[in-house]
Length: 262
Image 1 (cartoon, rainbow, N blue to C red):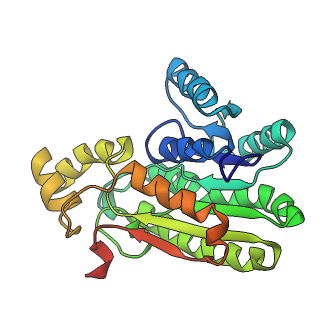
Image 2 (image 1 turned 180 degrees about the vertical axis):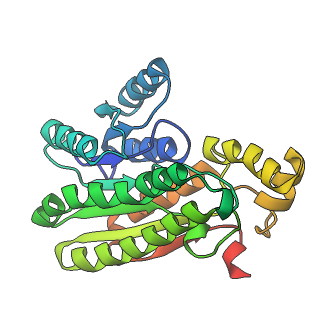
């Protein structure tokens, strides 16, 4: 029996990348899983069924559009109706757009702030009370090194991730007396579909080749010159969900190869 046996984890943006790795890690320790995200329906069902069969837990899926508060409420209601509680809320969903601010589309700003920041407010406001009532809960946020530092051409993303850092600290204080912790994980560049998709925009905005973007932009700031892996992020998330981390609260856990140490 894993240390999360009997608990439930809701992980947004968990149909691929970091979110999928974290959902699998929670399930491996016995947690029931609420998946959320977009993608091919057949592949998502394969993921859901695979988690159930491999780990002997229950896994359900919500296709909620997290830019719409009413859909977030439907998702959290489904999770509570199915499992009776959500013990771990991992806000991971995110999107990116790269452009100079004078060319930054307003609709992209609204999308990124809505998905990367506001959705975390909505999930937390809907699930915090039941965590407090049970005197145990874990709020985990996938932030970024961009919660601590900035890069050009990423106005919305950097603003949203700095917002996540602040939200994490507020919720840590609100939950501290109730057995509920809130922490953010701040990876450097992780090789995920999100990172891969931003390469063409960066190539265009900086006039670079693909290899130049990878080596001179993405990995330039990371002294290790290595991408962070989704498994490394999931391992940190799993630790923050454990009882050993009960006094880690309001922290920004950096996994960036030394980027923000410079």
